[in-house]
Image (cartoon, rainbow, N blue to C red; front, top):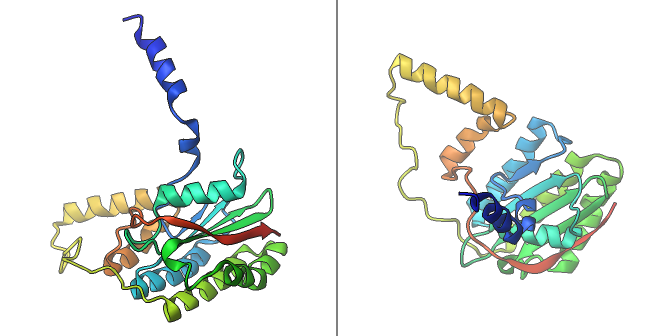
Length: 230
C-alpha cells in the first residue's frame, strides 16, 4: 500500500494546524508557567467554585508563555470557544488569559455576562486589581483579587441559576471496598496526583459540587471583555 503514507501526509496538510494551539481547559486555573503555588491555585479555584455553585457562571484562568502565532485577543477567544465556558444556552463564562513573556492580559466575557460585566467595568477591575500586581510579578495577588472582584459582581447581579444536581455522579456512601481494592485506588490516586501536579486533591471539591473536573458547560463568547499590557 504505497499510497498510504502520501495520503496520510496530504490529510495532515489539509487539517487545520491552529486547532492544536488552543487548549481545552478542564480546571478553573491552568498554570502552564508554574508561577502559582498549589495552595494559591486552590485559593483562586475556590472563588470560581463559589461562583459556579451560586449562579452557574463559570470563570477560568489560563497562564501561558506566549500566544504566538496569534495575538492575545484571538488566542483568548479561540480558547474560550474550544473550552465552551459557561452553561449551554446561557453563555455565562469568563476567561482570563495572561501571557508571561509578552506581558499581556486579556479577559473574554460570554454573552450571558455582558449585562453585568460590561467592558468598561471589566477593564476597571483589571486596572485596579490585576495590572499593578502583574507589574510586580505577583501573579497570585493580581489574579486572586481580580477573580474575587469579578466573582462578587456576578454573585450580586447575575440572575443565573446553578445547574440542577441530579443523582451524585459517584454515589458511594461509605467506601465499600476490600483492602486490595483500596490499595489499588490509593496507587492510582498517587500516580494521578503526580501527573496533575497535585490537582487530584481537588477531588472533594468536584465530588460535592457535582463537577467532575472534565470540562465546562457549552457556552459561547460574546466578544466582549478587556485586555492590555503590564
